[in-house]
Length: 355
Image (cartoon, rainbow, N blue to C red; front, side, top):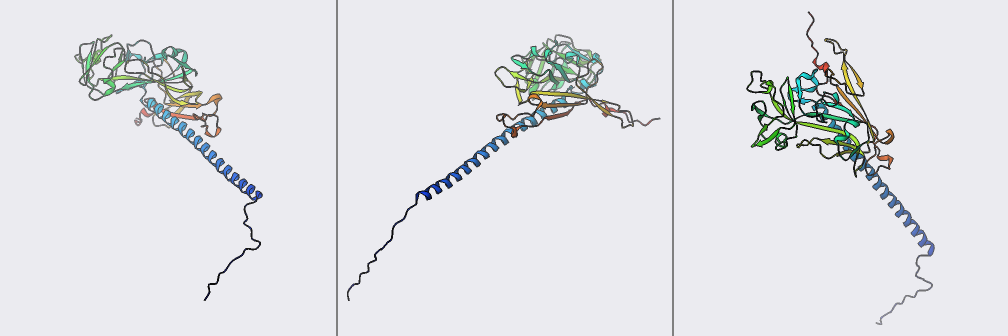
């Protein structure tokens, strides 16, 4: 049996490739896909940048609002003594020089003050204030016990683990406040020494009142000692910095620290103080009147509410940092509302039944 060989012959068959037109069509389709993908990527990146910018400025706004609300609630509080409750200067002995930390600076005797920049600029170095008004809060920091006077020119107090009082060690010019429920005394220039948790204050520039002299029969047993906090909020620009809302804080050495940037994109603010009136016993006649300034004088009552309106350039929206040119990231006008400690006189109405 022979082997049969089979041969296949190709007649008229050609190996075909892509034509030029097909290549052009494929290239065009590829370009369209790439352009669409690139455009989508760019849009996604832009939206992400805008969202991050908006998120950042919103977070800064919340942090700023929380700080101002906290300061407003603490304003004027030095233990059981509150500046808002005082209607006469006779129960406050402020022995410090006239400065931003003075309790009656610019004849404003409350824990919250609104002063013109002309009265503040000399105290804030290397900073240009752009808005006409500066907002100031002051109150007491620290927790102490075991107060004992050492004559009328010194005292000791147990600071324990309270770092606020311990940090005053060695700083003579740092203000220190001695208060009871009926009297407050503020001293600047006293020697301070922290000795194993016991703060010793010596060489007071002025003698202690008999209310704070533990050897006197007039001594008030609820005496407390505080470090004074002073927080200043202002809109401006530090040298080499950017314009925005800044915070200055009184350090333990009695000097104001460097400006802390709270919020960029803020160009102006409008501040109003709400004063309560009416408050008759057994009547719902309480009213709030907003005024653009703090009432002054020894008999001025403290405001009840604080309202702040923050705006951007030209009264417009606040721009998000880093993407200020993008309108999608703008934050609309922002309001901060806060209650001021001790200012609500209506809360102290007498509800005694008439005879």
